[in-house]
Length: 314
Length: 277
Image (cartoon, rainbow over all chains, first blue to last red; front, side, top):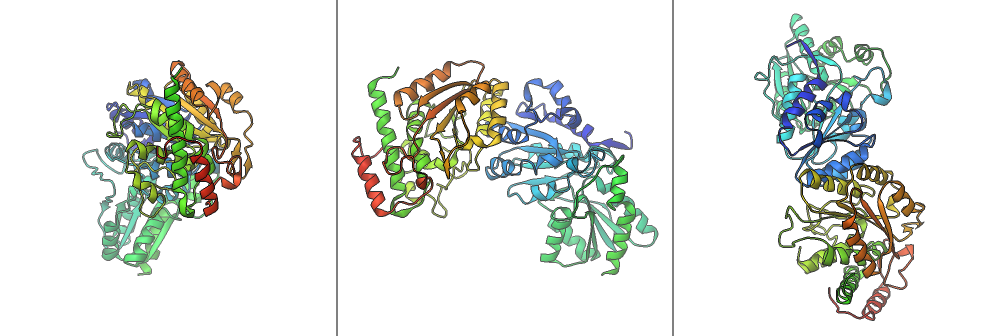
């Protein structure tokens, strides 16, 4: 296996796997090539439907399909997957507990070229505030495959957020990755500071922890793939153990992973927290993704600095 | 063609639905009166004649599906569901009380017989499209019915669904537009719906939504259409059946004074028929 994989490729494969179940139906809004749902379309053409560029209707149709016992997976870019169709998800999906899986691709800043209109900084926050919703952001191709299987097995609305660029593998193998919705995975043990990351930034957190160990700071790393329901036990255990936390996400720090961790700490075990992420602003065009992450200070160096800072605040 | 006996019996059901709506709104309880009264005849035709349903088995896989996209008119549906035995008639007294199974808008998780939760306008037609497509995928022969408001048809999502149903040839879907020409604040701005639905590829028929014979014939005709979805644009009167409520937007969402309530009851009783459904 190569050292990185585009999450979309992993997703396309995983979708075909669960497509063996005739209840699985796939909808896309004119992005099947980019979303890699075209692999499913080729294998199961009678259960694939392109709705055209009409995301609102896609959500409603999916709700109706689910009410007949089918399991619809719907797809568009993350920037459109929640915000553009918020009320449709709120009423037609979440309010009536429709078994719809919403998959947002090109998450965060990963569609660098297209600029702010195609970069999602708010989707996790919006999805997280909805009752009955589960929100998942896997960290690599392996975890994407695990997450797809898990959300297929889970009855109820889910928002799954995946990137568009190749990201390094965090996990060594499928066997090695234990994935349970709502349960954080500890990737590295440590006693001085805890770095909690989700999605595409988890590999940065692991690298940052390796760097802090060189200066004698033992950093623990949690892969918080499920942002809702958030793993409160893991957060509280970490707060009690290290007493200093950093969150990292490719998303606004308001209301998503950083917000969720702050809520848990604030109510149950106050501890110093630094949040790495997009600072209440839109994205912009850049010729490559890395350049954009640097501009928004979502980097290994920034995580190391935040770890030092939060450690001093103890 | 349907027998005079069938038509007369369904007209009585519609009248009883109107009485039931007024009964729910006794003692000053607020409700969406105008739009509930305008669909009473259509609801009677669907629930007491047209749809394949079994109140003793609300989750029967092969039942016909009904979505009230203009969810605020649910009072008419509640009366019909109670009469059919989906829940005890006494529940009608509990409408909108805290903890009630009968919410201000349709809630499929709380109310037996409700197929889809609606209330945020514009979404029900898409849900109905999903049900109709689901039937085709599962090779089931149940039919999906949906009532859309004409005011609601200003929502863009309705037309996304219109394109979808036409493209995917959902000929197991009967759309019904309650064209009462009034939204909450006055006349609708939507223009000619018949020409719009035709332009979107739907087999479209314009009928009198208070003429039971026309309603039944149109519902039957819809079953004969192949490869296209059907839209029945039903001309109705908002508030139909109660003189001072008809065509009066003040009664879109309202409470009746004791005098208005008595007058409404009197007018409906003068129309004959039995007192209950």
